[in-house]
Length: 331
Image (cartoon, rainbow, N blue to C red; front, side):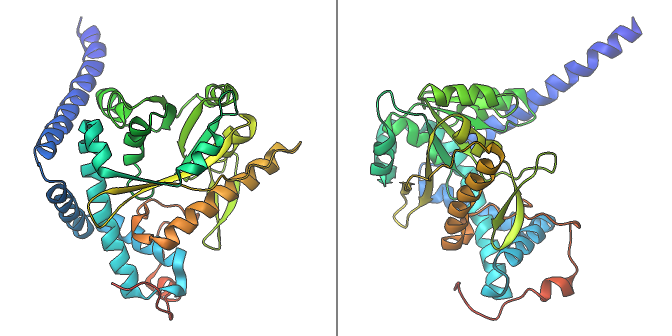
């Protein structure tokens, strides 16, 4: 009997702890959504981001190091520090948006969202035409793009990496943009053939395609003049799904709204050499991402280790050797 209790209690305790964490998230959501003024909510998020910038020194070091590796001598150490701090403020605001946008009504969306470049999307939205791969990145207010689907009436599959919590996944992560967003959430594992089939059937699939790959099936791309590992599965979706690729991003504007922008179609190479096609198209995706980050470096996700290096940390002299002489960004 004691042994049976031991075998049963483990999973029960795990489920209980997961549900407890979920309740904490729900409590946070309720508290955040009680803030009636969007500007006040974002100001709170920016403040929490600054707190994290000070407290989470390990993540801060990663962000500063990544910015140094990306921009090298183009920006000064002071500018690097300022961009990193603004980046943490941005991530704090992003956390506010994650909770709040799921409750936006259609009227809220009409008031908050500004569309640009919709002609690029309209060109590929042809009845009976090929599928559409919406190429997104961890850039700007990317969570708002989930709500954008509901606003424009676009139905898509969204490939996401879930949280290690079944309740958070089901009731939050897998309800991006609200329960009526028009998004069908697909967990990232084991869905390659399903996504390709959906694209072949003329459906739309949205992916955060800037995720780093691994060295089991390496796909190398040039990113800020460095070789980095890309996840080639996103290019594979476009190649094998015979899809047309449209980049999309969302950014906060000075008047408190969100600019949701569709870019020109990304050309997709298809040949008898699939491996080459995956590399070429992954490179094209990353060229788009790099152009966004060069324009608005504070809106990236620099605390994630994108650059492939043998050691996790560089010495201070090694970082100093990369430091700048030319000013590009002002505080």
